[in-house]
Amino acid sequence: RDAPLAVAEVLVLAAILAMALLGNGLVLVVLLRQKRLRNPLHQFMLNLCVADLVVALFQVLPQLVWDAKGRLPGPDVLCRLVKYLQVLGMFASSYTIVAMTMDRHYAICCPLQAYRSRAAQRCSGSIVLSWGLSLVLSLPQVFIFSRSEVAPGVYECWGNFAESWGLKAYVTWMTLAVFILPVLIITVCQVLRIYKKKTGSLSPAVSFQAGLRLPSSLHHSSAPRRGGEVTAAMTKTARMTLVIVLVFSICWAPFFSVQLWAAWDPDPPQNGVVFTLLMLLASLNSCTNPWIYSAFSSSVSLELRLLLLC
Image 1 (cartoon, rainbow, N blue to C red):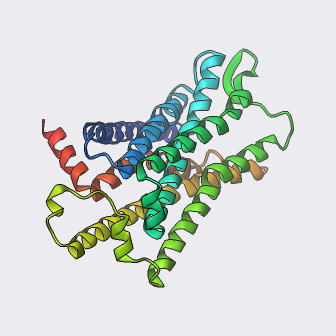
Image 2 (image 1 turned 180 degrees about the vertical axis):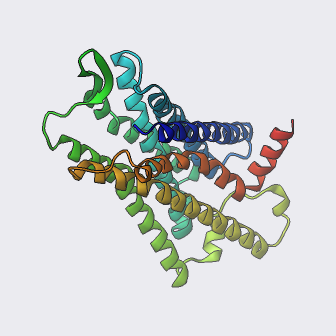
């Protein structure tokens, strides 16, 4: 390997790990402290922070150790566990964003149905489903990866495929399950919401009836004002979700493009600078989500400032 490039990669991964742990850890503490203010969006972001922490600890950190030492040390059980948790974080982060997008779409485009279905129960069900799918779909990692002898007396945590096409199938499946299908679902939700807004299908009055719980200070104001407050809050939430989705796509698209290229091209430049940078870009996504949420949530940003000033 190119020694300067390896050193740069270790430094970048260390910086990403520190930012991911700091950002997600702080926002997680703030969300856990806001028990009375917890709402469906808080629940989604709390679980997204947990998923991003899993990515940081079990994807970024092992990759950092691998780059620093040249291999991932430890027994076979540790190898399989780390590989399982690496993919679990990716699935959980991706599917939590999908669940959040679908929930916001449902709340905005079908407000009456959303109100009747009880937001808290719907949110909890979506989160359980997201983690359940992530836990199940990550299981193949346990059987694909093991501590294998890659050279005489040299053991590494390595993927083994029974057929020559196994690697291509594996990378293609991961790209579809973690990135392409979630992005398609998210895109459909966003397009439908924009279409309904442009065609006037969204009714502010109905949106208010099915809206969020309002602070007590708003109960004494007029109904139109309350309707405007709720509509503004829902629009702000939709914008925040859109930003999270865009950042998710920007970070992960190059990563999966490179993975597909490396799997399908007989002679890809796997150790090039461009390849390395694109592979690292995906890890940045675990750093961005908590700060995006903080930027759009005045209560979280205020709590963060108070926490940092303590």
